[in-house]
Amino acid sequence: MASLRFTPNGRLCFSSPLRPPKPLRRFLSLRSPLIKIYALSSNDIRVGTNIEFDGSPWKVLEFLHVKPGKGAAFVRTKVKNYITGNTVEKTFRAGSTLDEANILKETKQYTYKDGDQYVFMDMSTFEEVRLNDKEVGDRKMFLKEGAECSVLFWNGNVIDFELPIHVKLKVADADAPISGDATRSGSRPAKLETGAIVNVPPFVEPGEEVVVDTRTGQYVTRA
Image 1: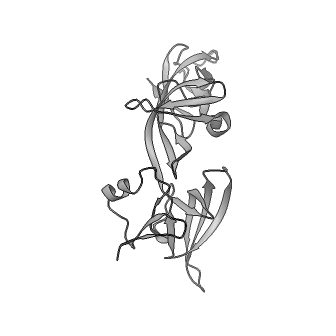
Image 2: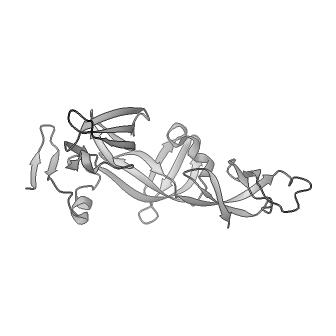
Image 3: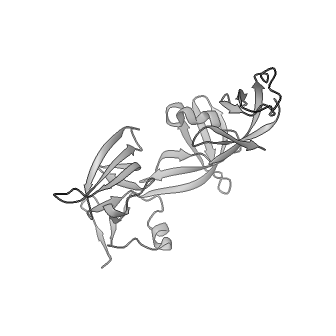
């Protein structure tokens, strides 16, 4: 049975054995540090699931449901701390109740870089949020001004951002095709406008745009 209650630290908690419907999840995720959802079973863990323990939000990177010959079943996971970036292995008893991290995603446009700060703007309210070089990390190689990204909030604070799965970037320079390759098969390294190095087919020339998968850093197609 679902219920609403206040926790000792003043948070409003929605507790239910079932995942709440989308409209209610949206209401319970309005960037408020007073609201949190408890509605997740360890059996529901998937890659990308957001959970909370030890006072921090974590993202599930890997999971494995284990049913040993003796003893209780459990779920073995590898999780990443959104705040520190640390990755650890964590085991949960099968069927145990977990805290779902109250993470809200908002679409914002990357507008410009100010020193070591990357500025993202809500194009409807013009509200700005900033992430520093360390927080952006190597993802800057696929971050182009004007890109629409998902900025993640937890307890009202910015904790991370997500690139679009595919981005269009211009080829700034590329090695010459291998002499004698009549079929123009294979690939060659190319430097993109953001500084990223990606292997592209021989027919892709400097000045052209290519589509890159930001999850793998690999060429997808010519734009």
